[in-house]
Amino acid sequence: MTTKMLLEHNTLSSQVQNYILELIPRENLTAGMAVPSEMQIIQDLGVSRGVVRESYRSLSALGVLEIKSGKVPRIKHFDASVLQLIFGFASATEQVTASQILSVRRWLEIGCAEMAAVNGTEQDFALLQQEMRLIRENFHNTESFVEHDIHFHLVLSQASKNPLFMILLQALHAQLKQSVYAGLEAQKEHLQYEQRIVELHQKICDFVCARDAENAKKAMMEHFDTAVNSLIEQGSEMNGKSITSV
Image (cartoon, rainbow, N blue to C red):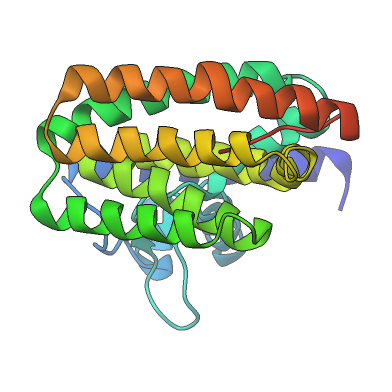
């Protein structure tokens, strides 16, 4: 295929993608609903099956469509996968720094704690208290602690009742998790530090479950401005590219 033919093919594929993207709001399509079949698009736009399939694949990669073999593509429930890819690329190519990622996460987490205290249900609070117990029980097991710490913060995002908090924090956690171990290992022998980090998590948990939004927000600020900053410093000494999460 010549360069000109490739360009024409790509242009057709882009046009089909735009057609589907415009169709979604026009037809009020929501997550889980089917988009037009390949045959319907071929008839409506007069393009080849290959162009339609390429367009569907591109929209699937963007997180717009869910494609399963032998079935009509459907609108995908949005998740963190595409943002994880973008954030991972930006971090790997050094277009964003660890401190910039952490700064964004700090403000998200503060807002999340505040809204969780306002909007959380008793079920959310029970899940948060359960993760708090597991954090206490697993602090000396770094891998388990990291998992429960992440779950703790994701339960908070769920309790906020704003799906964007969960999506953004999931995407950021994917980048932050990779080198949490460095900072934690650096502090492992310091009992006072261990008690402090558990205490900060407990304060957040208690204020959120008490629906004390203002103090929940302040507790999250304290968590980031003391414990997390300390981990960053320690993690950086052990690994020059460490991005720390707790």
